Image (cartoon, rainbow, N blue to C red; front, side, top):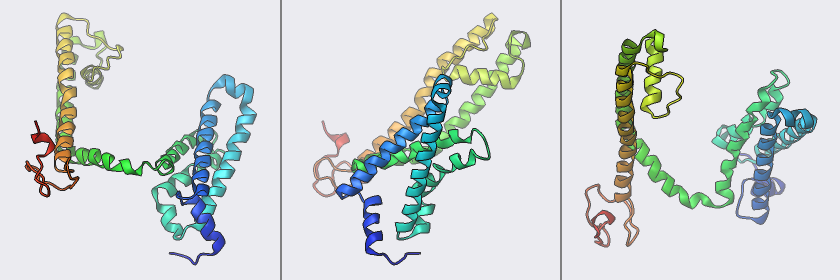
Amino acid sequence: MSRTTTPLRENVWRIIFGYDTPAGRAFDVILLVAIVASVLCVMLETVQPIREAWGAELLVAEWVFTVLFTSEYLVRLWVARKPMAYARSFFGVVDLLSILPTYLSLLIPGSQSLLVIRALRLLRVFRVLKLSRYLGEANVLTTALRSSGYKVTIFLGTVLVLVTILGTLMYLVEGAEHGFTSIPRSVYWAVVTLTTVGYGDIAPSTTLGQVLASVVMLLGYCIIAVPTGIVSAEMVRSTRSGECGECGVRGHEENARYCRLCAAPLESDRP
């Protein structure tokens, strides 16, 4: 629900929510610096030598940042034209979650480590640096991922069946005496090997097991390329049906060869 604004509230709103004024940009830059500093304090507090030497100072800094961010959150609610809309928005929720862990630490020791969620507030850098113009490129990737979701899901299901079969085979070949104590543990080995991670905590010892492991390793290189190819194909399709390189018009059909406005060859048909 919107509220009646006053000159003071309007001026503060322009500073906090606006970015097209020197004061608004300065506020956002200071806020980003404070967020980075607060996250660094939380990270340093987990390093034992630093905690032993500067624990009290880091605790004071943590509470100072929390009080500042709490004040900022309350001011945002005060000046927002629709306070509940801001509170339910993505940044509103992140702003709230970034201050709660410190207060929860009074009841649950150690929960202040969750303050690293403040790093999400660094997403405001898009507004400060006016990077929103590049969000169109991100939309191409988002569209490609959404379009390839069904194919990738089928692929992951196939991989799940494959690692179950491979893990079961390795369990039968190697057995508990060589570390493959159960089918789930053998499936874990198959996942680690197929993805070419190779922790080495479990390894086959028999000749047949090593041959099977070699096949899984080679198969892993082939499988890794599949989701990449699916997403890449969708990105090419999204780009082709997107913007003409000559006039910039968007919205071409998937099988279009020429621009519907200027008749220029689309990118994929150019020499």
